[in-house]
Image (cartoon, rainbow, N blue to C red; front, top):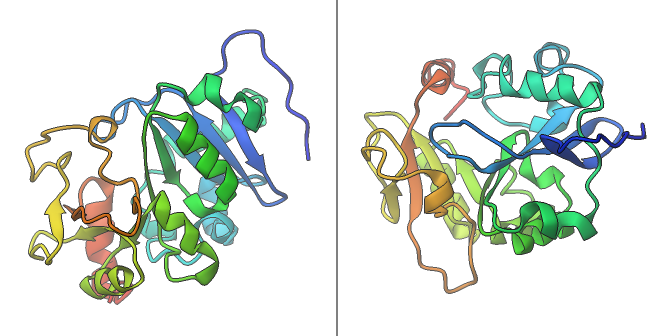
Length: 245
């Protein structure tokens, strides 16, 4: 692993975890209109920019089998992910050790999986960050895989179809479903309060409904949102080619 040098001024983010193929970075400030100013956690391919990694296929190291992988991604890779990747390669982010979590995450709210799979962050690290923070949100497309079942305590099952939602519910996950405008809400779902269709009543930083399954007795509703932004065009394209069934 390449060592990260310390910087004299307060950093804009930290390296949380590095492997040969990917790096996980927490950025401290966000101007995301929907989420509000949450600490955002990103999983990025180390050796190639997010744009090149999609073309080469290396993006699967951080996106796994996400149905929106590649040109259909809901995230504009040319913006925040690319800028963060460049900052990482310019040594802008020092490493943050678990014994430093309290000083960074205390009083802040965290978004796991701003880009890339949230389950790439080791479970013990996710739990420690959640415990140190003032709340969190998170999502994963890997909710079907047995090895990632513990993560349902902290993140939502990302669902793209009604069948996904039914399957995830049967496995004990709370769900976050992206739907088209013509798709009705399902039983057990409510509209995302931070969405356009809900009138932008709040921001994720204040809502925090997407914080996983808080115990077996957690009876809170799951969340659905009409696809929006760059994702709207890509979502409809995926449906047309059969990428989302």
